[in-house]
Image (tube, rainbow, N blue to C red; front, side, top):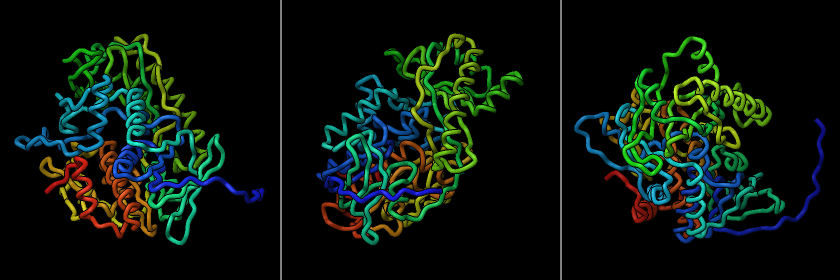
Length: 453
């Protein structure tokens, strides 16, 4: 390989208290939380909108509640509140969410369905960031870290404004891929143990006829809410695996197609997900190019399959994500690694920053007795780095445990805690390990975060 030696040059510096890399699921909440604590906060996002996996890779948001419906007699509790609930409230006002409607069937997986409109979500989160006073830098790529021993002094970005440095006192990595952590020299692994995906929005469909078809398959998922402005209508439909003719089933398996979807509109599926297991980590740029092509070919094939379903004969692809979505990129080594037993046994810690009760492998794996477990603050502190926190799918090395902590609503909660902690660290001029947990707990409770007693 040949090399070019780039000449040194001076680049402009912007100064902040808190710098958050990644404006996705966790990053949006982290930035709002930090700014509300009075920190001068920068949010750096490579795309032209906010939202991340919430608007690119999911179906419903899992889950603001404990799994009470799977355990008769267990109390229904909303266990994720604070800024994440504010987002849902704002979405409901704009017709962009079903709110937390209960599942009618399949409630041993999740007791509620919280569906969103992807485009309204992008707008509402952008507005909330602006209202909080966050300095938002969209279409801006993080490309490096400025280190002094074990401390991040700044990050380097590239955009159409040129190359810039963002100095800060505390930093939060919400990139999903763990880019900031890697640039800062943190320890990490790349398990490549999840499929990547892209999700399409599908128009020209009849949701109710689709549901009738689903009922003839295995157990159909059902949730009832407001659709096209009318209450009492299906908003979550689908099934895990169908009883198709062999030729169709082979195609469904080949393209990794999921039939579970949500909708807020009569003639639209918000998400139909296509999955693909890459041979290497999705941090590999050249292999991702091949994966992007493979997924787009699978999207086209999915439309052909959907058109075979009654009521969907005129289905068309109305929306795609701009790039593939991941479930895990780099797994960052933190001061604590959450285990599966922590989750299933409902363990809470002396430094809890949130409570959570959902597991994506339910009903096979569920939190004991429909309860919750805690995410400890130390699980967000990057090992060996003085002033860096992570939030989102970057934590938890065990696959089964990660299948809980990587989910959207858990990422929301981690984001609020990480942003709050980063702001407190900046204000008090301390590192992440020097921050008193009592100060963090008080700030989280004041902001409406639910913590177990």
